[in-house]
Image (cartoon, rainbow, N blue to C red; front, side, top):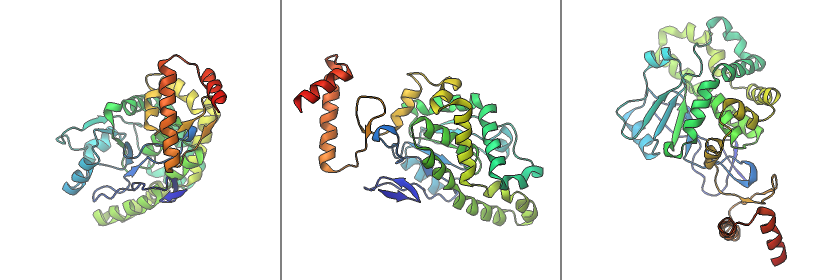
Length: 311
């Protein structure tokens, strides 16, 4: 198995996880991550990012090449009003402003962002206080007509990190991979910090005071958040029920963001397929068999018995 930017990903001809933009520092693809049943999240369907108000003409060309049709902005009203929003005149793109929080971290709590336990508590607070926003965002991301989609905040780490963790959790991505994805933001935070200092040279002192807030991307913070979700709700599926998205029309639709895999019909027994020609042929045979079973009304156990008799 290969890796992309330090995170587990398919080995054969993977797209880049980190995408280069002039006016955006933390734009990443959430594809290629392993999920349950031997599947992987689809490439070039779902992205996470920092602010999209500084995009250059070249950036808009890159964005158009990705065929983005949905933008979800998780920033506060104040941030959107003062920093600007995604350009409204981009053809074919629908912009949704869904603030995950009402306020930003105050300067007085900035030193606490060096502590993973504090950051975890902030993330859990975002989930509880922003449950309605999370539910709305999941419903938008579950609609295949809205793909490819990107969601973002100001630096693409905290609010974006919370939503990314939830989406990946609902898709069945392992917890360690969710944490690894979160940690990829650190390098981008360094670039954002440099950009702020270059853009606002007279504000060095203020920027330095907020340095812990910007740079905090400790894996332990996200690991604590995932553990907190499980401790409070039991599982991601249970959380989906609380959010009102654990229905056939929402969560099942969201899981279309997973690619094909070869599955045993009985729950919890997945077989990972890595994509050799023989395995690809086997997948096609399995698809034909599944189609036959569905159209002729066979139950999974009955189909398994038939396969066993043939074998």
